[in-house]
Length: 166
Image 1 (tube, one colour):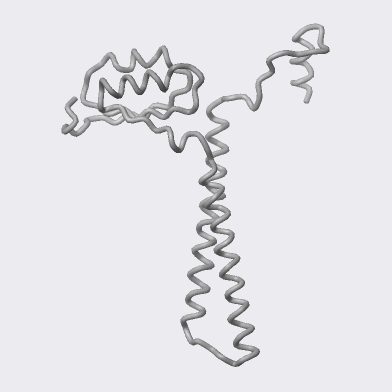
Image 2 (cartoon, rainbow, N blue to C red):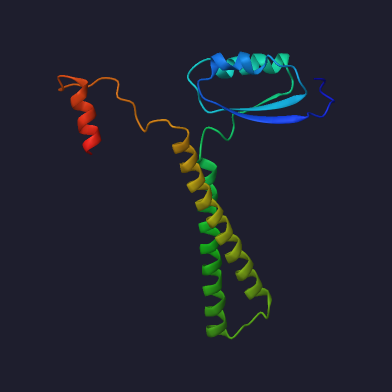
């Protein structure tokens, strides 16, 4: 496919140790674009994708958002801080009005409302993103941890029995 053609199909492929299947994916030469998401595979998947990207420009590789949920946590905290700042600002305005009798009609309440609702929206989006991120991690099917060696057990059946009992 030439780079100026519009793709007929767009495929999004999540890759996890799929090194041997990449060749089969590129056997067909039709007008499509492939977006490959590398989720930190421990084989040569990323290296092969970079090589294929040089041969086939319709391959796009997403390696930025697939590694960390840190941006979701950052926006959760930013939303919380903005909502907190708006509440502090609202308290300041109320105390200033009560103590000094200075009232700014309209502007202050509008600023407090906009800041508070914006902060709550960011906080809510961050929480929803955290849930989606956790579901994504679980759907990938990776275990929480891998047991390389077991010491103090005569056979592996004892280990699996202990794990299934808990």
